[in-house]
Amino acid sequence: MPTLDELKNLLTDDTKDLRLNLGNVLDSGDLEPQERYAIALCSAIFLGEKELASALIAQAGETLSAEAISDAKGAAAIMGMNTVFYRFRHMIGKESYGQRPAGLRMSRMARPAVSKKLFEMCSMACAVLAGCEMCIRAHEASLLHEEVTEDRVHQVVRIAAVVQGFVVAVNAAAV
Amino acid sequence: MLTVGQKFPSFSAKACVGSDDKSLTTVSNDKPTGRWTVYFFYPKDFTFICPTELVEFNRRLKDFNDRDCDVVGGSTDNEYSHLAWCKSHADLKDLKYPLIGAQKLAFDLGIVDPAENVCLRSTFLVDPLGVIQWSASYPLSVGRSVDEVLRVLDAVQSDELCPCNWKKGEATIKAA
Image (cartoon, one colour):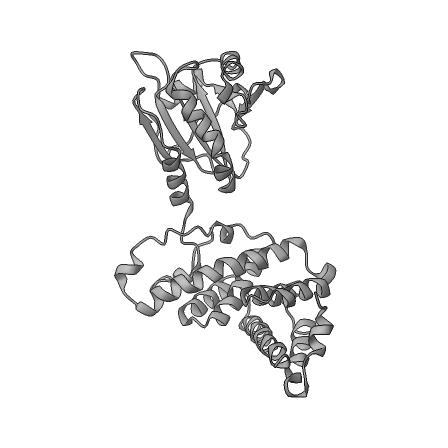
């Protein structure tokens, strides 16, 4: 598995904005370092990028607790399901579907290992990556309810956006 | 008989787990474990329908554990009777969940058949807070479906917890 630096070095001049952005969002901002890495990790897992996810865990070292890694994985998996399922409900907009029980287990959401706040930050990243308007609105409201400021919500979204751009850039380098 | 929404009675009961003499133990619900529990009761040790149910719960134990749920079986027989039965019956030698002597508990739950003075085939699904989320009793002659117990467990555990399930007029999702 390549290290994060090795992945970054794959990027050419055409895509080096993403290399610099990834460094910036991981290393600065007023989210806690563990939050920044967990959000990036969750985004990479959500996008199916195993190499980047492993590289982020290695790069984070002790910054990411085992519990935070666990929450990132849990949130990515649940949101992998929910962004499909609820996006259908949101897009179709029929009350009749909304009244049917989902019948889907999502108990991990009720038992975050680190905190509800971190789990919601990870979920927010997945919601923006999935591009579902109502999921985004709902998770933003949930984060504000957890007393996360709009400025920090904004930083969560920046991390998710940069991870997706970085993935595209790594793939572009292979073409 | 106690039912949905009621507190499962507190109890402490002697039990055996499998067919080893050393497995004799005490099972109680005095400390919260953060897990679900399915309690199932059967009429008598050394009868015919009972072992198939006990064996099926054992075979599907991992399915319950995957759902953060423990399994406890019991009847009005005592722990020594349970142990002797497990030792004498090849299919019951490797039970991995406890069988409790549930004389008092059965009366507290209201599941004692008045004519036979033994437990009905009753099943209780109890949430981590000790509240009954499902209960059902079958006549003595009807065996249970473990699939049905798992189906109910899945259903009661499948809350729509995601803020994605946002509906107009709900300002925030309540904390789980």
